[in-house]
Image 1 (cartoon, helix red, strand yellow):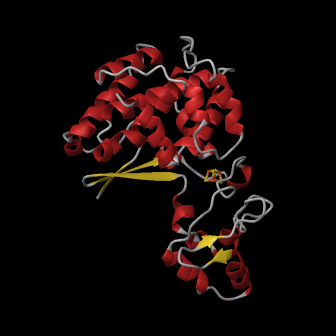
Image 2 (image 1 turned 30 degrees about the vertical axis):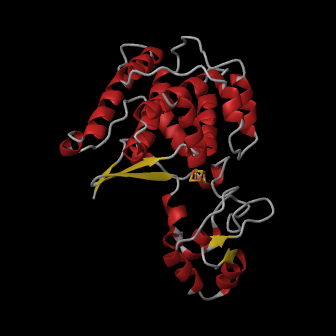
Image 3 (image 1 turned 135 degrees about the vertical axis):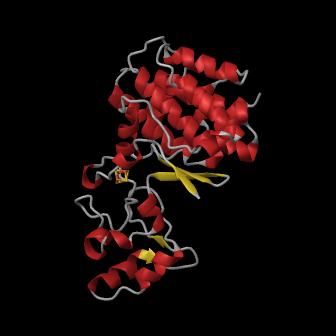
Length: 292
Ligand code: SF4
């Protein structure tokens, strides 16, 4: 299988104790069977802690504490499994996070998910255009080929991002429906109440000014959205809707970013990712409202 990644992929490094929104808090983490067996085989002082804090039932998982923290996340923000047993002893999910993987034919596409603040910062602060190591034979595949056209439109820095989005929608002959997006987003499953503070900002709609100050960051956001979600057209044939989805999230993020600053956009993108794109259910609800 050929692996495709964006050019910023190798820049990622977990910032661990400096992370303000650790992925070790608030998420139930399942442990793959191979790692669960390794944990069971650990001997010495650490083994009783492993046994006390892992549910080794049918689908093993870490038992979160009352504050929803992973029991191995210590007060210094570091992972006690790494400090006691080494990085090789992390389970598959912890090793992978915040990476996501998509499959298309013989290709495996890997990216950094924006639910991680360190990954989001890398993506949205990159000044250079995002590129991907897509082999020439993959470019001949219809969906990948069409996605290249979308990337080219989104990365045309001779025009504003607003105009690029219009051109992208024209490519699929689609228009964003004038829905009550505040009501729709508010009705989705919620993880973090911080998202509510941003949602109220779209109460009067998602029309934005033509400000272009953060155009490169918004371009990176749009390219990320298309890279991460467009190829799922292979499963649901929602081509127009998946292009509209990227346009919708762009408009929502821009409207929410009232300070018009990069740090606020990074926080909005991180929350969007945690709230929306890690839930197939939420994505499907939004796609259904975009159905043409
Ligand atoms: S969210 Fe990202 S930076 Fe923070 S602890 Fe997880 S992987 Fe590390």
